[in-house]
Amino acid sequence: MDLATLKAFKPSEYEEAADGYRATSDIASEAKDAIDNRIGVGLRNEVKGDAAEAAAEQLKKLSKNFHYVQTECGLVSTALNGFAFDIAVAKRKLEAAMEDARADGCTVNANGSVSYPAGQKPGEEKTADGGTITGSAGGSPTSDALERQAVNIHPKPHYGKALEYANRIADALEEATDADTKWAPKLRALKADDDLEVSHRDWADVKSDTGGVREAGKSYFDSLPEPPKDGTPRDNAAWWKGLSAEEQAAHLALNAAAVGALDGLPAETRDEANRKVFAEKRSEFELALKAIPAAPPKYTYVTTARGPARVYTDEYVEWNDKYSDRKMELEGYLKGMDQIQDRFDRTGVRGLPEAYLLGYDPVGHSDGKIILANGNPDTADHTAVYVPGTKANIEKIAEGADLGDLGRSEMLWAESGKMAPDKSFSTITWLDYDAPDKVAGEATRGSYAEDAGPTLRSFMEGNSAAHETSSGSPGHTTLIGHSYGTTVVGVAAQSDIGPVGDFGPTPRIADDVIAVGSPGMQADHAADLGIGAKNVWAMGGSYDDQIVRQGGRLVGLGDNLTIPTDERFGGNIMKSDSGDHGGFWDPESISLRNQAAVIAGKYERVQHD
Image 1 (cartoon, rainbow, N blue to C red):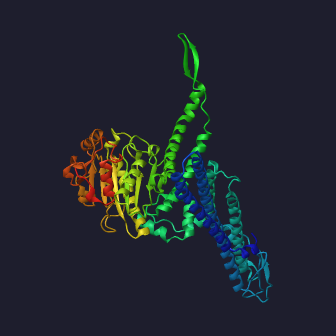
Image 2: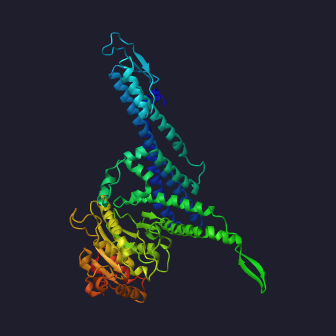
Image 3: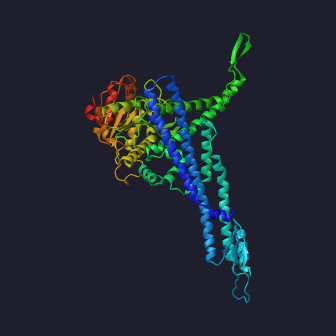
């Protein structure tokens, strides 16, 4: 880049263009939400038939298109800001060098060279003529030393300062040229295919584009305020609130996975970040699965002394060794994604509210991580967080004879709303820990809960901080654990994520805690959970639920052989009509109504056992 171009460059024009793309991203986001939460809902609820189903499928595609536009325009906005930042740095260096040169009696020429005046060195009788010097960019210790030596012996007294200014100008021009060269291909890459279909390949390109912009914009991204190191959820909330719209957009565009996992940030922000991760991961897995060659014929027949025998073909054995495990793994990831997408698509069905993806990692904790809310917890009057137990994983998050973990959360939302129709509710499925996979062995150890407890507490404190930021108060929160999930809840309620004493007493993890089918909470009294025994609730069932609870007692998941459904534990024992370990959320059940009464704060409607 030459001097005239850099001097004329106006970073503000690119920043204004970035604002325009960010505004377009916001418009696309609003359009996507309108389709998902209003237009699509109305169509599903009011129109039936094949034509309606076809229209609904087209709306889903349109929503995906808007999501893609939202993501790509956000990335373009960040790239333009990054380019403007890099050129602005070079321009400031150029302007400073030119100003210093003028103040020192030198003239900067159009080609970047510097002219210096005539002068007389001390001790010299004659005045030396002035001259012009062209600088060189870069430099090394060796070249710098040679330049200093040349300046010292040069007969013209102003040669040295002119050389310094010329070198500074050359450095600034080279820096601008490097920035232009670096950003040009990144910006050219930010374009979509010329069609109306957002394919898996398009989303894979988004991931590639994000990596390119992150690499090119390192200086710009490093200049942004970073999340507080080892910050509490309240620190995170304050940090995000203090960012400008441009800074928030940059973090979302370049660091979506980290933003989506940060406790204390608004639910809408985390949802936007995690939906981007979700779309990119889905495309990655779909393309990887498609790349696996079809399995060759599995069997062949060979002749033996006893007649024809069926055996595996050599081709199948080779294919199986190379691809079978990976194929099964990818299919598992996509199965879980299908269930999550199904929940997105059912918004509005039977009044189901908008879903918020507050956490997502298909491979986290070995079985995957998902935190999904029904309704916005930042604005809800009452929020319930449900923690599943043994065998919970993202692949089976919505399936099973007992509704599945997402289904249980939906039942709690619907039943709680009946308890207080004038209030708003949000129910959250929280699976952000490595749940035991086996009832025997793994589920008898407290180590899984000990690892998960601080993570759950951090989420609960983040939920409270986000609610206070949005609504001015923490709202009413209920924390529900099922089976081994109650052990996690017990550890979380007794843990602290920060240095003890730095911020006063450990805050209450929730207003109410419900232990459902609990094998023990690593506590021998309800009062140990830090919320007051009158706000601790427990229920049990028959058949295999008795086996789970009494088994937990024997292996020590409850301190001193005590579990929450014991009177000596000191909490409230609620009536339950569950016939087994998974029936506590059956429609119209006493078990479900009792949980809903606590969630809604209607304690007088709880039936005690």
